[in-house]
Image 1 (cartoon, rainbow, N blue to C red):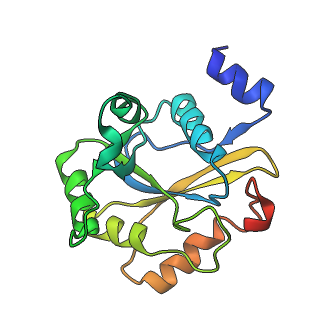
Image 2 (image 1 turned 30 degrees about the vertical axis):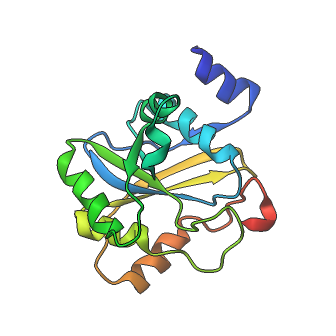
Length: 178
């Protein structure tokens, strides 16, 4: 048993339910609920244990010396966030230019409790013409639940209702924000 698996399963008591389809090379992965900074290293454990390349977007300033190497190593992709940029188009362009790119995002857009998700993840998926994969970080069951890829229909209202069902009953690290 590798050190990562030992720490994740034996010391932390977590498990992974489901797997990423290796044939799905490009996707938007929505991770819900995002209630704590602990979600970042759980994502890194998941990435390592599933042997799946998973990326995230961060402001370009983070990719400078001395920490730029770390953000690239953990799957980070820099994004110019200056005003006036069409971020959906810019991220769709990243998908276009990569052979493999799975973008992890939090549709809540914050670690606080929200009643409505932000829609950027959906528009990125439809603009890049990639599926959405729902991943639940359930601290109540200490389980990372990886679901099958979902192909958006173009009807954001209906699709969002369907996507939200993947997270029914899931408890975040800060349960009051779930």
